[in-house]
View 1 (cartoon, one colour):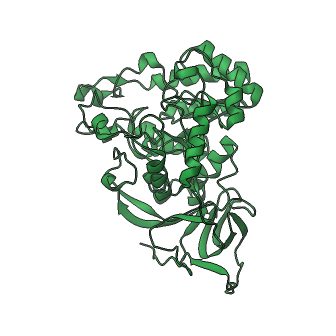
View 2 (tube, helix red, strand yellow):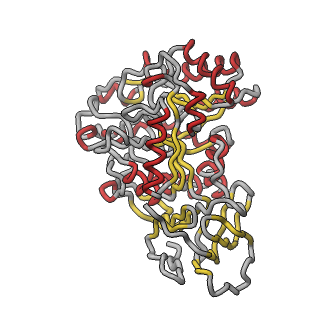
View 3 (cartoon, one colour):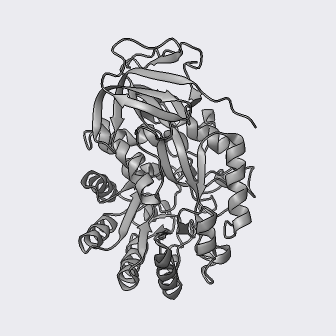
Length: 447
């Protein structure tokens, strides 16, 4: 598939938000072909050359494209739930220009051919840039280590057993030791399996609803163990989608000790609590489960303090047959790509964090963790951008998602923050305002 190369494009009258440089203010960006040519507060002074396309941002925010470090793609193997194409379309609609997929496909990404298939297919689609995690253990079975060295050479950014915890302490110890020799990161789903047989957060609400509970301690115990193993091995450890107050404290303590420990969370865990399960709503059946209000507030505080390094969508697409079941039988997981930015902006609108810090957790934060040349606005960098109106209100309608998956716990929720244009390698791959024509002008006003 051939893709036309873009020419010179001047983005003017923008509020440029670039956490990597700490800049947040009026600015302009010039791209040429696939790269950012220049960036500054007054590049053009009202004069743009005739061969340059103009995009008037009308005061809207221009930021690096979002870097989503936790996405389940389902291709190969379960394309009826999601495909690389549908996930790519959903991602660009949500302002995501780079996503990293979990290895729990069929076949599992535990060898070079499968990893290369995903990378090749993503290049053909020419939508969001797609990178892969490699599996820590063969077949995600938690027993025998995969060939992490070879997978790393083939392009795997880090290693995880996806939605399965590496439960065997000896296997985790060996994984951390082996990965440390290559400087690689182990990403854990921190949940003790023997405590995780329930379907929602353990507590009064689960008891009243007659549902089996997953105690907070399932996450806490696994984290405590893993931090000890990280200290023992000198490895690099990342905890995915943390959801409890104790988890924030454990990670903060480990960082103070100088351990190479990081973590992320998802919008589900700072914007919703267990009450969202409501009348047995299976769209709110997530892994880890939605916790109580005190835990939700602690996750917000962890983001605010910087203990939590990144926000990921935790996109887990399912078909209707997997979700429209009695609550105990329904699959875990929610669709998150198209709501990632808007729901994360709640942190800004509620006064919890400055806008630049919210964008940091979505761009340069995850990019730094994964060693990616992404998530920043720099001369010579690839022109991966998102233009968005942080104030525009809209209601989440899951049936309107680009994703094949409509299982969003945010369905029907009012949000603020709409993506107007997503640019990858200088190309506008998503544009609700038809700004692809020259001269292109974004004409939306703030809501």
